[in-house]
Image (spheres, rainbow, N blue to C red):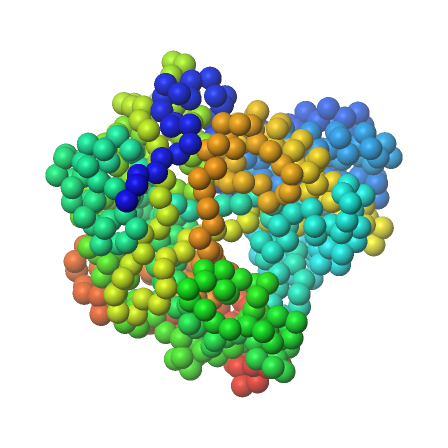
Length: 559
């Protein structure tokens, strides 16, 4: 098996002078916001104050003003300003205000925007963090997708990877435009792999063998955070979803739309056939889902967490964690601590998103130029060593209940939504978004954002966008292997229905199991009890009732 390393051999020597600045994770990670946007456009500075920007659209804002208030993560402001300035050059009668908000507390702020949608002047937000507050109050992109774009030679939907967008299974609408790609993968230290004389693993059994040989050389095989954030929204939570998906591929036939269902689309559903050998077989463009059938399957016990496949998955996890991730120290390690171990050359492998490739290049360039890598507490990361960085995809588990090869979390990111106001204003905002999502607009955005520290998480989903050579080459070896987050196959992997109490309980019994206090059967029993306990809350949050489950073909009443 041939070893594969990242193009450009991202060592400290080779990345010297490549990318300036320190990269950050994509939207939803806090970077500390700048309260003053210092917008360069005349007549917009006075409208960037919190009170005017959010509560008085009839005065300073008006119908020809577009206000962008996404999260202020690294590089975002520079990118938006570049797009805003270019758009106003094309449309002198329009004012675009860039008024980004801190990541901390953004969910509450965004919820308030939609709760006051009739008075707010805010237009563009990260809508995924507004949750149910945005329901019925946002612009439906589907209403505009077939419109000819003034910024390309065809319909708007042909400017970018439309198939990667999240479209509602029941209505065909969507309210979140996501134009950056994200892929979760394994990063590894090629120098340690060479010393241990190991190849990249393609199966879980091979991963264990690699871990044993690396540990014998005196290195920690895997740098893995083991705190609550890791199991909830980070690395261990990602792995839980990835490997649950290996056991649930066939369940698409349980909740796929049936003839007569309110979600059924004969143009695709009439021709669908389940094929576990094709990792893209259950893409949303090939088969529709009926959420009522999903909840009915959980309620009736047709879809459960207590399966031979899930027993294989969690038994396999216990063969690796925490034994090859620092033993008990793993549970006291957060993401920053795990990354530090990897950068120090003390650990050989580390799971991250594609942005980690660019971050590594940025960080090694800083070290090579005599700068520090700053940690969140303001201190400098110590003991960083240069090494050749490589990547590999998720090694597949094998055994009872495993139905297909491992895929990964391979999604679009950004979640840009817009507050719906008058028809004329909605049309104006959508025209701006057409420009932003064009090759010209996204190239302007990326050039400015990257120069200001943005670390792209993967190739842009907008056609015709080219990154600087060092980033383009870093992503060259990334190939799509299929996404686990497009159906309900991973929905019982780590709790239920995005309910915080459910995820907290999941973390507690994960620790019990991985610390050897309970066996795998007891773990799965607790996991299923957690799902059962929060089932009705999950249905309520999805606006589905127990009565709706009796007639899954009908659109849920939500009452």
